Structures are given as C-alpha cells and as structure tokens.
Length: 402
Image (cartoon, rainbow, N blue to C red):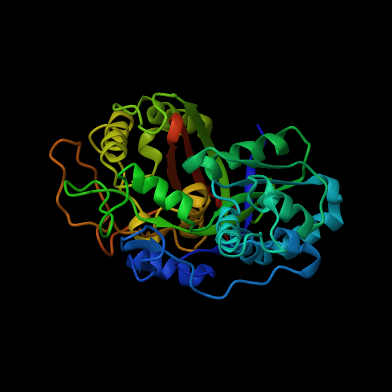
C-alpha cells in the first residue's frame, strides 16, 4: 500500500497562525484564546475560542466567496501556497485535489444578511446564498489555487475534517491525484451555538472534559490545511499518515453509543490500518467535548482498546474550544507539530480541568502540566452526531530525519 506523506501545514487557530506560537501555547495549556461573548446566545454570556488576529482579505475576483469561514481558510491556504504552486508546475492543475471538512461554511454571512433584511426589507447587495452552502469552502479553494482536480466537501459534523484524510488517501492511491489539499474550517455563528444551547450542551463556564463537574462544551473557530502526497524513498517530510479508521454506528442522532462501540471500531480500524498494536501509540488527542455522554463513552472506548495502561491523553478543547467541523484538522495539526520537531521528546498538551475524576467513568491517564514523552505515533479521535466516527494516526517519518 502506498504510504502518504503530510508535507506542509497551514494554520489559523485561536492559538495563532505560526507553528511556533501554536506549539508554544499548546504545550503551556494557554487558555487565553477563550473569550466571553454576550452577543451570540440571547441573555447569556458564552465562552468561545476566537481567532482575534486580522484575517487576510479575499481578492476582488473571488468576492462571491467572501465569508469569515473562507477568510479563515485563506489564512491557512497562504501558508501552503508555495508547495501547491510547485505541484501545479510539476504535475498540472488537474492532478491536484481538494477535500475540505466543514459544518458551518458561510452561515455567519447568511445570519448577517438576514439581520440587514429584517432592518431594511432587502438582503445586502453583496450577499449570495451560495456562501452558506457546504461546498462553498472547497470551491473557494479550487478557484484560489486555480486547480481542476477532484474537489469536494465532507460534512459529517465533528468528524468532518478527520474523514478528509481517508478521502485524500483514496485519491492518491487510486492515482487520481499527485497532491491533495485537505483540512477544515469552521467559524463562530449563532446557528450552531444556539443549536447546542437548545440541547443544553453549552457549558456555563470553562468546559471540563472528563470531570465529574463537566456541564457541556465551549465552541471555537479556526482552520487548518495540509498537503498530502505519495511518500517516496527520499522524501524528507517529517510526518506521515500512518492509519485511519472510520465507523458509522448510527446509534442516535445526537448521542453516542453508551459503550462506545462505534468509537472502538474506528480506533481498532486505525490501529489495524497502521499495522500497529495499541501499546505503540505514544499519545492520544481525545475528542473530549466535556458533555456527559461523550466523555463517558470515550473513556470506556479507550479502556476497552488500550486496557489498563492507556498512553497519556488529553482533550485540547478547553484551550481552543470545540471547532466542530474543523476540530479534526486542527487537532491533527497539533499532532503534526509535535511529530515534526527535531527532538522526539516533546511536552504534551496538558489536560485543563479541575482534576475531579467522575467516579462513574473509567479513569484515564490525563496529561499533567509540563509532562513530556517520546512521540513517534500519535492518535487523534473525532466522534460526531449520528455515530460518525473517525480515528487518525500520524507517525514520525524516520527517513525524513537527519
């Protein structure tokens, strides 16, 4: 089977947009990107993870794609543009593909337009309904990079931008593409936050994954993009896509299977795909949403697969918020950053919580502040509404090291 290199990364996260700033804040467990907003859920203060730095402006000839969601993606896209340009020159625009995960797309632009319509009786002149279609993000990147290969969006809620890695690998292994741009982007909007609020799933304060006191999620926003290519014998890419597992248990429209059967299937499938044993995994980025049922399910799934001694693990959602359709890509980016450093010993993302274990759930070895480990194989889990599950394994490319 053809091995896949993850050659380049573009970032646009609440923790910053450069590898150095993101990795530094991540390893410190810096929660400074979490801000209170009073303008999203009526009569409520809501803690969210925000991208607060200036975003790039979308060029005039692409104005029909102008939305915050696409500006987040553009920020990440600019960082991989040189590699994409070289790939186009080498293989042609028809050999470059795009697979993007999102759940909000440009719905925020639609909300703004509806507000104007309520005040004036008409939509603003620049508003286009297509801005909020799920395919808008991948179509925007297709025009931005000026490529003509396979291009589509995956939207499976919170597993969207994890599943894109499986889609991209299939395109490469089928020899339909020589390079595939993958990742995801989601922006804060009232629709999703009020939707989760109606499910009584939004935390009243800072989310506390796996705590006995957890009361729901914090939502965030951001984007991450990668370039995936076939791994060659002399490839110096520092990270490879080692394995991916998917499952769809369809247990319930919004609640996970209580014993985590779908999650277990996805994790075991990823291990099998990577030809690894459970004990080979050095760290797990947990889905860890801080909702009652997700954390209960995931702790059981981890114990079922990894036994009495799971590897160190943590949820990074208290640091960035749950970025929904972008979560898989952003959390895969965190794993990529850990693996791409010259030293294999790295400070792991700490678990930010109150330290009060839920006695009804299995205890996990959650990462403490400053804890480090040798990192060669990292797993990132994403579990979504409808039982759409995905588990991703990234590995250090030993051949890519000096």
